[in-house]
Image (cartoon, rainbow, N blue to C red):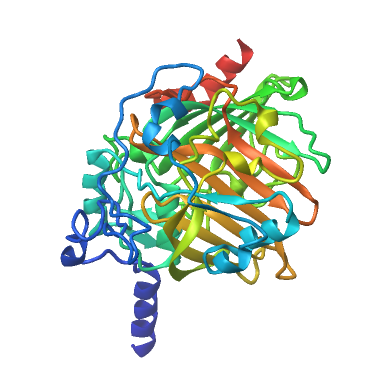
Length: 451
């Protein structure tokens, strides 16, 4: 009898949600002392981080030579407050990541961080705010945090209580409903040389479609289709991914199309630390978008919230008058094109679990409170040595009320090379497209690839 009761109790513990929803009273802070997505609405103590006033509002800019920067005079007209370099590093050290400090020390004569006024441009559509309020009191994580339940559209955990909740907020943050974008990757060698690897990406952010419900998602949060358009030897390769919501129930679905074989086949693994497409070994699959995919190989802990200098509002970097050789320079990105701001970020540590494998033993993530975007990552090897430093330079696309990349970097401190990705300066402007799910079927890919 006692054995049966003990077994039943254990089963109930295992089946219970790992992370619970917040109370109605706590959720009532959203839209009040907190922004609708869960950030602190008010300014910081000295006013260097202003109060959130609704974010950047603007209609879609016209295509043109300076299609994005010219559209944001209140931001692009800003001048740096100061620049962090080797000369004043000690003065600002407490608000920098270990990776940022290391880059300044590694390139003392050229690496710098221009710091601008903080502009809290982040926002989202009203339907995302409404869903976030609903999620706050209903969403849960199960199966050791790998199964997101009772959530659709919006941030699932705007008032997070655990590290797994924070990383889920990043994975499903609002980036639009559907789009076509161009992702140019530059694997920059020690002498500064690179060959652009060009990818066109069609994405349906299925979880954030305004008609999405927890019941009709069919266990998919993102449909993703990636076409390689350069270099010539890789042209025609296609990757199709259905990113699953419950990765215990079903792992990420992925397929590859090879133009030489003229057929599509199930991919053995497009996840974890398998090499990323077109990255010359400088990033893993789970580093695209700073982090993506299953989180089950790591233990996740919230270190706290800090005020730090983070890449943000990178409209200068996305300028379409720039060429890629203007951006990627020997050793590091052209830092004159970057913009750093004092931001409040969630600091999140992930440590590799015993019995699992990954190239990275530990990663520390710095996550924007306004948009839940990972802005920087410090990456450590098996010896606990800082190995790679990652930064994401975001912009708001206010006509979509969505956050997106101007570019991102991964610096390999051991190989003395670096990767720039998610550039689009020389490519067509991002398109908003309401993709049908059929566009992301294997049959559709086969037909498009053969044309």
